[in-house]
Length: 70
Image (cartoon, rainbow, N blue to C red; front, side):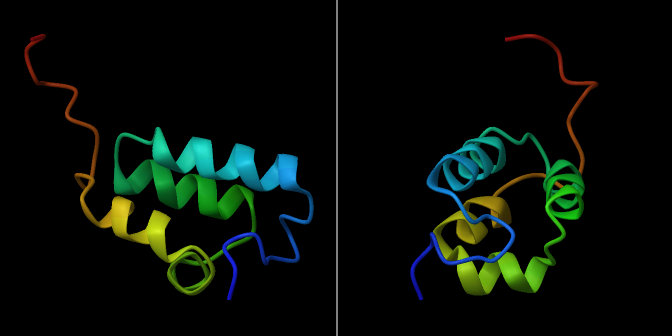
């Protein structure tokens, strides 16, 4: 299945925007909010966007707000 295939992300612009927002998310919690806004589940992400799902797996569960600036 193509990563562009999705009823709720029916235009290339919406799909590209969705991918960018997921790629710039700082935590899994943030991704969950994004999925909720797009009416998608974690399973939908894994099935329809496997490359993005792999990136999400590497994110921390919550943003690391206590980390000192680099």
